[in-house]
Image (cartoon, rainbow, N blue to C red; front, side, top):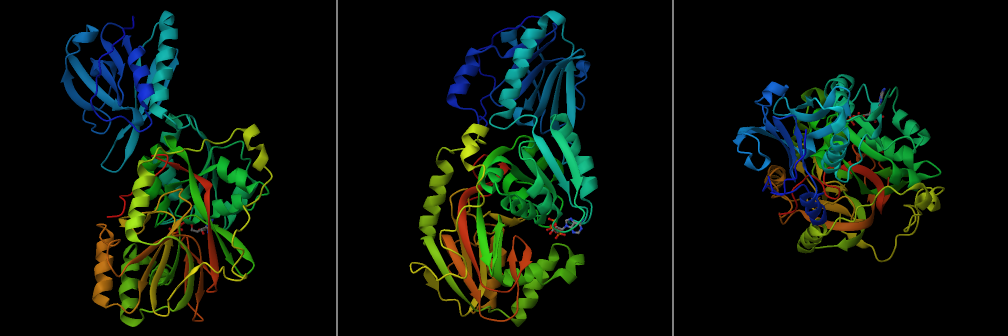
Length: 522
Ligand SMILES: Nc1ncnc2c1ncn2[C@@H]1O[C@H](COP(=O)(O)OP(=O)(O)OP(=O)(O)O)[C@@H](O)[C@H]1O
């Protein structure tokens, strides 16, 4: 076998976000073609691994797969090979490459149906004397395939046997476990046995033993995990060191939609394998004498009622929310409260500018601190509350928002609250701000219905009756005696509560490293 340098570009497609110009230049300088035997070459493009040669003879497998292998005929004159079939395997889909006594094995994900991926592999015989060259090439392949993401992540997998339709264990085993195994992740699986178990596990976990806690559940388990990490004596260190991730097995699965852009178990598993540690704002909620953390949302009014007040209609699946919404709209539309907000950005135009600036700027990714660097924060619990608790005097500079006739209050830290519902299009993971949407309850019912309609196609944000701001803190005091307040989909007592944002306190695994998989505000 010989290896040849090929300095011509093989792909004109846009580069994956993690490839910098400097890396690209280096790529062009380095040898990137591995010729295997006389018949096949493996070529590192900027976006794909191009396999040129007689693939089917070498056991390439299914030639119809569309995600990873685009089949086309190519002339490979530059490498001196005859005209052969070329397959392009997206670097993003490459899970592992390893040299063993059997040869070089490359494992990658390919679509097995429109929503799912599965693992497939190719193997080439390699002669002993070629080992060094192949090893160097394999390392380059994996560095490009993983970019800023950690290889061989160490995952603590929590399975809620009762999440969603009660199918989490099977979903994990069938669709996620093979992808983690192919990527040589170190996996430790535990089933939750009772409510609050995930909090206990996170509170006790050895944070040096894992890169992420992966919840096979809905949004309830991640909520518990963040709160478990938040209870530790070293809360700040733990929350920054260990990422919280989700394999979507519940009914809402907002975390997966925001960070992986999918509700598919197998595709999410791939985005966890390739996920980049990303700081996430968390908020503290004080109520009575308690302090809890929230990563997703807080709701009061019609959304909270529909979310929590329709439990008995679970059999309707996702329709229970719409049903609950329509029933409430006919009977009650107003949930009065007192609302005070520390507004940071108050107009929709300014919010759009803020979003645009955030999404084009170079993401300042926070790497997980090494032990020495982190030693300063190792013994620190949660950050102190800048504005005190709900029991303290209201700060004077907070804006009082008239809410005697409030219909809906919804505050979001993530953009998508459930499939097709990008309720907070301007939300970003780590700007230190929470997005607040309020709607008056006395607007015509037809307008409310139109709003519902506009959520999925993005028109909701711009509607005049939809009030939006970005805030760093707020306090909400219900005026009635009974009702629902939802925090990350969980019910909390119907009592006053105060929220304060902590910029980048938590850590998640995201596809992009800095934004959600949602379209921005229109
Ligand atoms: N073994 C268990 N028995 C009972 N409850 C549990 C168990 N394990 C976890 N839970 C609880 O289940 C709740 C729901 O968790 P999960 O995130 O999986 O689903 P969800 O999407 O929020 O719920 P659902 O999909 O059922 O609406 C969590 O609050 C958690 O405390």
